[in-house]
Image (cartoon, rainbow, N blue to C red; front, side, top):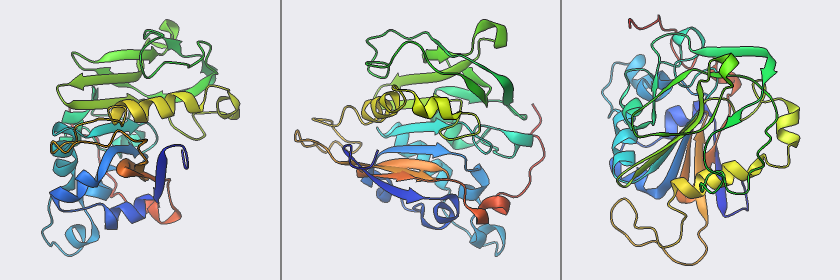
Length: 270
């Protein structure tokens, strides 16, 4: 995305633990925030809280409120988003799940399909997110199981023989837009064939533009008029929330220090 109307700010999870803002106003520097492969505890329980028992603002509530006030939120699947492996992602029951177009399960929600499956595109070809995307998608070998919320649109799904689960979901509620992509951005769930696919970059750019209200002329979360000139936006990706700043983008991935960044969690009761 770098240089393609986005300034990308790399924010691996161990950086997000420290640098994701604690004050409400700082979130309005971003148009879009992406969350991928970062457990909720990394954001909820920084060392000052978890180790020192000091009080801090709840950044999960700040993310939710920012979305409610017009921010574009996206969650990307992986081993620490949605609920994920052994439930360690722990996004179920968090304030952020209220802003998503899907519901997270309370248990390990991985759908590992080593033989691969080909996604079925169910959204209209002229939908802004699917515009220009080839109909034939490469295979994927895994994703998180997510549950559609009322009013959300399923743009792509698993084939019926694999359960027909939602794969790409988008929703617009008033000024709020949100997306859930149940698979990952990198391996292992996305194979090399997916990255080599001619359509790989198109839906990602479309999703960011849609979440940011197509940039030009957008009335921001606080009612501030956006410029009609080409927008340079930024994406925050703390390993991972990822956010698109007005104009900045954070993209992150799992860092070596992240292996114990989230305290182990037992499954939440259903």
